[in-house]
Length: 246
Image (cartoon, rainbow, N blue to C red; front, top):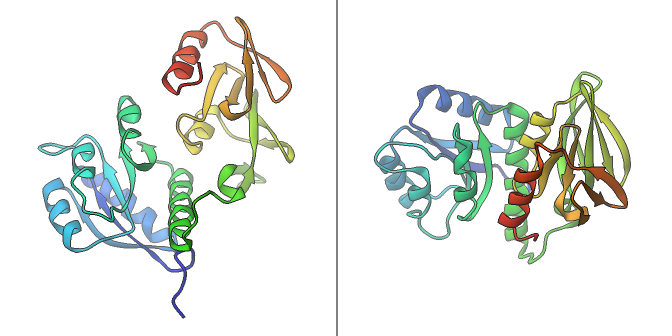
């Protein structure tokens, strides 16, 4: 019997003009049991030539490269195209990259737990395609996060309403209750899907899916009133406009 996409190893390639980034990503691939690295390239054109004859499941693709950018390369890949996970040190490319059918966006320096998060997202997406599913399963409607508890990373699937900063900890308010994790807002934001969560205050990050209404100085998220920080207001409203929420 053929193994399902959810169980069989997923093939991948890495395209990055920085040798250090190639080394880091290849080491990360080696540590994820269901990933099989088929090739890595510093030159985008060589990668295109390889991928046209050697299809893979996932391409970890740098955006800022000479001659041919990752955004341009992604548009040259033959159908059926692999799942694209963009990698870059330039956060300003995030919005443009999501205009393409990208699965995820990893900001350098890439943390291992964030890489694993993206790999699991790719496996879930490919399993859906293999099963002929047209809608996401319940797990994918929520967020699969890696949170620090008891000096280790624990993968949990949660429907996250909002996160509250408590000194060096974060309290996550979820459908399953409250979770306390030794984690920074920055590390949490790196683990969350781009565009679905936004920082509204130095102490709060919210889910747009559970945002009920916005007032001048407050929002309501899943029945809870939270303040909007003055320094976060403009970026928050721009975020809502960009993603069609207002």
